[in-house]
Image (cartoon, one colour):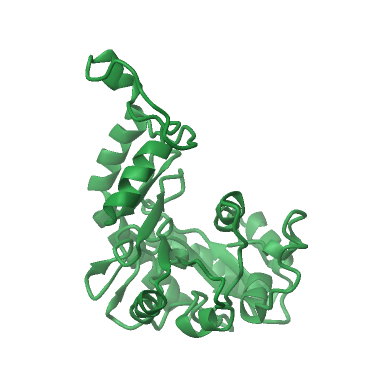
Length: 296
């Protein structure tokens, strides 16, 4: 998602894209990262796309060897794990999104986590204008004034969203289990169609959060025609995500980046409905409609 590139630019750094591993595994891998890694690289920023974990062990080892930061984007993958180690615990810093369509939602907002004490203290300052004391501390008499020790903005999650998040957190495991059941039904229904099913053959040590249901259409299909057919059948689809290359701001920045696998993935991918209150009959209807669309 464009947020990944945006935050790098806003930090004064230059984003460089690593390619997807394959159409079957659109996540990055150490192999694809090494192709664009240079002595100027300051951090590696991985995204657990669709809720499926990246192959983290070799990436972690590589970052430690080269003494660079590892950042995880866990927006799609709260609750996902590799050998029972949760996504978000591999990196130096990990970022979560609580937007309304996420597995764990507060409507808006997010969370950053780190094991690094220095970074933790820094994040706590920049989330509130760089101030050393919060407004509540002053009202409660715990501080009479404050200093500003770094530039900062208002990144505070309010109490109402925090309360929503606590409740949603209690539903995360059961919601992810429902998503898994629905995804497995999709895989079963679609396995004999001429479609690519990313992550469908993931090994057992990888536990997904099953955030979205991407499929890869045959090369001869026109993506928009398939999406229109499904729309007329009452089925909303999406795409994850439009190419950075096509955004006005990023055309020049990424003009020399070569990502043939992810470029093909973008051209052929559509995202089918997936959410915990979806039922199996609705999944069957989506699959039947997609089958008709492909024949049509």
